[in-house]
Amino acid sequence: MRNRSRQENQWRGVPLRVAAVGMAALVAACAARSSASLQEARSAVATARGDQEVLARAPEELLESERALDRAESAFRGGADQNEIDHLAYLARQRAVTAQALAEERVALTEMEVLNEELEDELAGLPARQTDRGLVVTLGEHILFDVDRADIKAGGAQDLARVADFLRNNPARNLVIEGHTDSTASDAYNLALSQRRANAVEDFLISQGVDPLRISSRGYGEQLPVATNDSAAGRQQNRRVELVILDPGEAIPGPRVAVQ
Amino acid sequence: MSGASVFGSPWGPILGAGIVLGIAACAGDPAPDAEMARADLAVSQAEDAHAGTHAPGPYALAQDKLERAREAVADGDNLAARRLAEQAAADAQLAEAQARSEVARQNAAALRENIGTLREEVDPRG
View 1 (cartoon, rainbow over the protein chains, first blue to last red):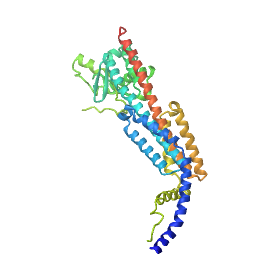
View 2: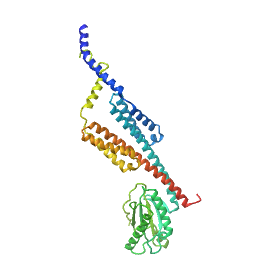
View 3: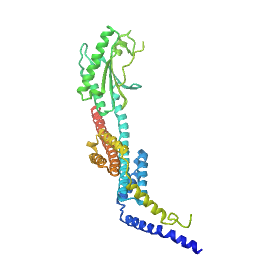
View 4: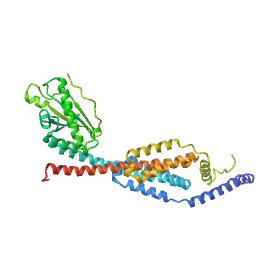
């Protein structure tokens, strides 16, 4: 028993002295470290966590900030140096504030959706209908143009001004302008005429402040009738301009193909 | 395996951790390529979101830290460079989120106002 205890003491002595020095250094370091940055991070995360909108709309970003805070807390408990603690705490704090900003953005975007629906109702005064192509406003040729003229009539200008308003309020929505004719006159003539009419509408909207990059104007001539060309009433229906207001964010599609 | 070793004693793990941390700090940190690339991307995304206009505080911080990270890499201080790059990315992401939020709020406010105006145009009686 005596031999073993001497042996134990021999082995104990050196490492314990080293351990004591090491511990003293660590204790000294612990005493000098500040948790101020950590407090800020805790506070920012708690604020984000307590915000109902953050919980509802930015839960993943909130989770990321909580994980970042955990890493900072671990570093603090584990005896990391001040720079590392401050660094991790800073990251956690920024993530928490980012979560709040993201939630705010999403609240505003939801409000925009609601307002857009209201704005579409405002177009109810115009002949607009929702189709799979988008919101289509159909204006008869006789509303927009005098016979043989390419410029827009007063009544038509009012309608187009409201479309321009709508587009300016909804910058994420693009527009396709389609000119259509009846089957009187040649294909080539109708194609050219319908393109000129579509261009005239585009020019007018641009003059009302709509960004030209958002607009595409196309002439389809007689290719896409909506009524029979055998009656005067039908032909009048076919002579039209369609303004296709695309869904928000949707890119301008390629030209339509007439079904023969 | 005689008697007690330092790792069997209560001070063992604490000393062990201290040694590991000490070694980690002293050993050469790798060049923070991934962190620099992330920071670069985050700053350019913030710029796309017009953070310079709508969130100038955090955006300026992000740019400054990214620049200092590059300097730290040039000086061979990879630890400082990594931290600066990580912070630059966090600042840039905050700037982007705040800028988007500001733009969305302005758009919603403008839309609210315009709907009111439109309604008056259509029916001045309200």
